[in-house]
Image (cartoon, rainbow, N blue to C red; front, side):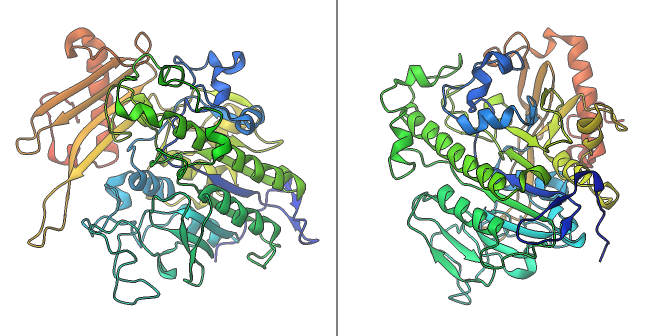
Length: 508
């Protein structure tokens, strides 16, 4: 086992033991499908100047307070804005072509699963003396007939199967487990615990998950070794759909929005309030407010236990939600800002000075950066493709070049076998986002020729209402294509290997 690396400057004491603890605890909270604009503080004078769009009219008092104590990223980017691909990149620090998860995970795609041989962030923490806990939605393992209660059967009967049980051998260093694959019934969730026992719950899932997390902090049942630091991930499903009734949120939260019209809630200039989905806005924002309340409970527990000063806390999401913007039904999996731009706030008392940063943070950067903040930069696996920006966050200086762009990736089902199972993925769209521009190129599946171009000047058109002709900014377009080619080459993407659109994209 690799030895624990002490951080004397951030020493603390776990209230459940008399032992000094030198390494920081780490808590990563990431509700699903929460877009960056869905945090109330973006509408305040202090923060509004850091973004080019309107903040949503949502109520998030705990995130407002947390933002004042944290480094707030204005440009955190979900490179592949889908649940499973994002999670694969988050845990491994690699892009979907290397993590093993290029598509959303379900039983029709057996090849699509988190690599067993990948060294994840939890593996690294575990190998360095941490207790590791995972609570909530996982959505990284391809479903197999491994139901602990019904050997030889899937955990659900629908076809395709989406939910999954993750056995101990596939938990990547997480020694405390209270999780499921994916299941979208917010007030009837279920979970498998560390021993594989299934728990059927009849309350709103974020509330229940936070109860489990707070019990873990209190170590009520000896869930962890209190002499060790801990790494805990809490993955809430809301504000993920469904969001159409009181079955999906808490009534106290819905009451804050129920009397507002779609026009009062969907205030982005590109929102189509005539869509049927507009009726979901009160429920979506109610879920956000409910998630905020549970996050506040976590922060209060850290304070009451004396753990806050020595705990890195991150609040983020896996991707956004279009919510009637652009007039499209797909809430994610598009290059639009509502889909790709995610919350990312990190608090590390006495080490990180609260501020807003415009660093373009890509999903694979999160793993190495958190390891760097924990003093484990020497333990970052060599195959990690993201960058460690811990020095930049701590000192304002960086030994690695700060990114000028982020990759956008959209994959679709590829070839199928004789049983109709998907055995490859098709790399349909690739693009880049810079401080000013968004460019994405979609190809035809049969010919691999250019099918559609997305090209937006985000500075003059923050709501991406005007899809520009490719020749409208010839110099900038050349720069973007060069940047795209270099990034695809750097990650060994299929577009680079197959030289897709090589007449446009300079790969060398």
